[in-house]
Length: 166
Image (cartoon, rainbow, N blue to C red; front, side, top):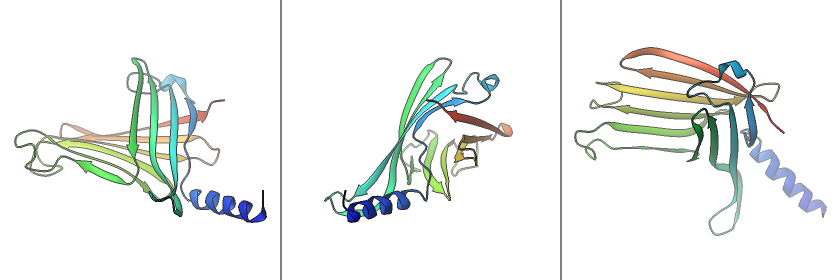
C-alpha cells in the first residue's frame, strides 16, 4: 500500500475514534444479574459512513447500530439510526399516547431514549421513560446504565457490565 493510502486509512480511523465502536459479541460479566428483560448476551454492529450519497469522501461517522439481545424468551433484534429523534406528533394520534425516541452521542456515550405520555406534553398525565447510556470502561468492557422513570413509580437505575466474547 502506498504511503498516501496509509495516511488516508489512519485519518479515517482517527476520525471514527471520537466515538467508540461497540461492534462485537458481548456477554454479561455478572450472570447472576440475568433475568427477565436483562440480556445475557449482545451482538452489536455499528455501520461507519465514509462517503456521501454521491460517493464523495466525508468525515466518517457511525450511521446506525444493530443490536441483537439474547433474552430468556429468545433473541430480540433492533436497528436504530444514530443522531435521529422521532416519535408521534401531538394531533397525529388524537386520543392515543404520544411517543418519543432518540439515539444520539453525548460525548463518548451512546444514549438511547424512549418514552410515551398520555398528556399534552412529556411528563404530564401518565408517562414512562427509559434511558440507556452505553459506554466503554477503562478495561474495554461495555457498561450500560438503564434508567426507567414513570408517573407511577420512582426512578430506577440498573447498571450492566458486559465483556467481549470471542
